[in-house]
Length: 142
Image (tube, rainbow, N blue to C red; front, side, top):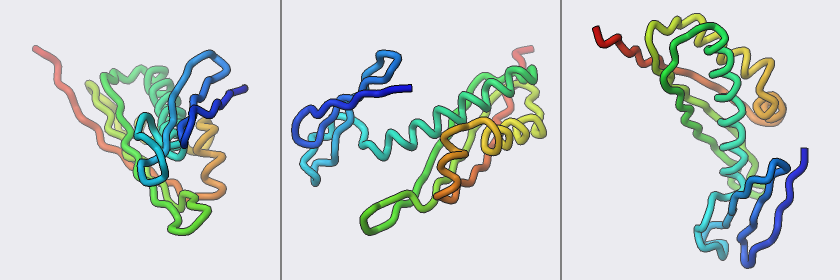
């Protein structure tokens, strides 16, 4: 896997993935940025969220769960001094669907956290990562 980061002036950077996609990252205005894109540390959280949601949805679909939506809201705390690493990350999943089984949702979340999500498994060695969830039950239009 490869990526390329090109300085775009001030504290702005254009990231290009090995698959050819681009994302503009920018620093906060107080650091000289123009707020043109997410901060690099926000990108790290976005990657974690995308990685685990990918796994959770794949596991639930393979388990024949009728999922109509999955959102993960991530909150992180950082150290107050440099390096301002993450000290705690919490993922809150909101999974919507019809006849979702709580046991299968819990299983999907645990499998992602403990076995499949490369990002969370790598990060959990240096930061406390927790998760919880809620299920939004949708009813058939009968």
